[in-house]
Figure 1 (cartoon, helix red, strand yellow):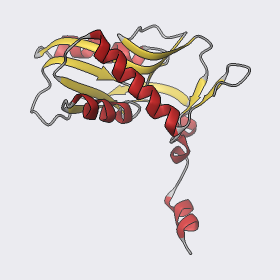
Figure 2 (cartoon, helix red, strand yellow; figure 1 turned 60 degrees about the horizontal axis):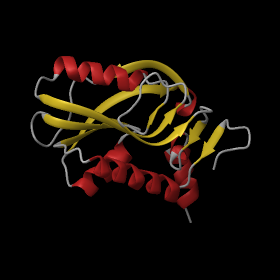
Figure 3 (cartoon, helix red, strand yellow; figure 1 turned 30 degrees about the vertical axis):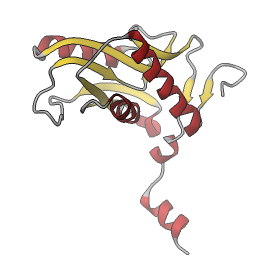
Figure 4 (tube, one colour; figure 1 turned 90 degrees about the horizontal axis):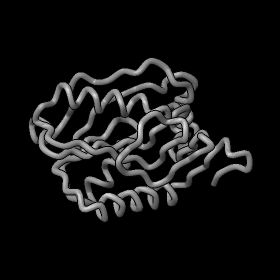
Length: 174
């Protein structure tokens, strides 16, 4: 649900999963065939996992990080992993790169550039996200929702960013 001022988007688990399913349909209807899915951890892990299951394709993972401060709400320095974890040795062929959103676009652009320059076995690369914000400098190949007002997206699992084991002990101790 988008707030009246357009500054916050609150997404339930059901809405989140529905958006990923709509993304899967966009990819499917495009007719593009791919060999692997590469998700960007952490935001792309959930959509990457679901797309991997729907398309029955291997899932590779690349860690990136730019939101660390203030429980993940402040963008900082972009860190890209040096290695990709994949069940097939090395990522190759036609690859679908998945993240949750194109916010500023810097992460996706940096990863695409790195993959094109450092991973010759990748013969074709396309990108997919749930959301693209209006301020993004990167335009993904597939996107479920375009957000021209650039709201902060409150994803259903973000409460875990500030949850600590002591809170769970308190919650689950009878």
